[in-house]
Image 1 (cartoon, rainbow, N blue to C red):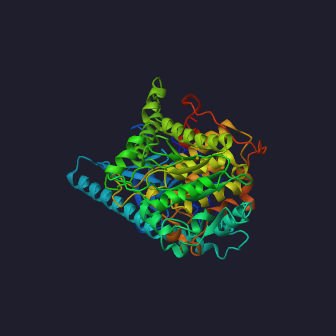
Image 2 (cartoon, rainbow, N blue to C red):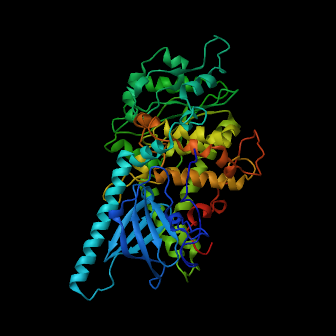
Length: 566
């Protein structure tokens, strides 16, 4: 099928000083039907069109008459003067402000679209009342369409329906099978003294019965499966997210395991079975006598979790274990930083912006500092494994945000197989999707779009930003290019596919048959060449990036796409 994806073009908006907001310009034939080219399953709602509206540009003097249209997928603005069209998938919306008759739509990728719905007759009380009513009506419809689609995955289902059947060979849902992946990986690691496997695929979570946010199948030490009950560890670890295998060296015994924080609490509770599991993980690697625990949080936060309502904490006084704190802030700090960055970029896109204090203002957003800290944590894991032959256990609070960032970046530094297009897809499926990163909660605002959503946070975008930093420092090490990362980032918010919908693998299961996988689109032969790095030269060596702040730069290819001066 022709998987049309028409709105990811950086084409100049309406006029030379407009921002590049994903426009599609009319063809040479002048056929206006090209201006609103829909993708499969997309439906225009004629009754939701506003014929008397104005696009408001970066300066107050820039106003342009437009027709505003709403579909079941996105917002369209068509210029009556230039014949161009711009659009905005509902999922990319971060928050909406309503001031007077102007609707300001702020987006998670630094876009902002402002539409004046007023008639221009502000001196007439009757006209002003009507303008206010139209603005409120439009805001209600926009919010309704967005929330209905995001909650019920409606458009993703309709899009898949329009394409017909997908063959198994091209079906992106088949990129990763946890049971097959771990069975193949673990079969190479046998205890020579006993002839038994060191690790085994556990079926304890079949049908997601015990740990709903975990995959059905995961790796556990063979010694643990034969002794202490896992059920006690499930009770002790927050949300039952016990230490399980994430990565295993293909020939040596070093491993990366992941979990959530232990339920230590104020009373400094202990769980013998939890200690036994960590000891089994440690003993699986005879090359290093210490199990290194990377706690992604600042130490003060870990202590705070112990005295807070979660009654969490960290591995206090575990034998033969060393705890390292990575000082990565929580989802709320990251959301604040992203919004600060977007506000700064929006101001910088305005004509005549004074950039004499640009570096200072960029530093104030803390975005690059957060990227640096995450990369430093991944570097630490890579160094412990490749230089000290150590095994590493990684967790944060819940084990689905910062933990996913660290373990996936560490694997990219360690394993060349994940530096390919298919390898990155598999890594995202394994350590983000199957291990329960809350894509839906982190990406989709609540129905009250004008207020902050406590669950929304750019955790996955940070991971892609960190990965781009690696691609920049090692331009020949990765098979994929920047366009591939940007396409994945856009798919996080557009809700066209089912890949990033819902919060867990369990919740996503019904979507496998009713929606399209993003990888189906990206792996289509006609598109794959767009994402290949021509400089790619594979290397089996681990990568050790520079993690000083002076080596971290703003990802302009993603964040500055909407700057009309670029």
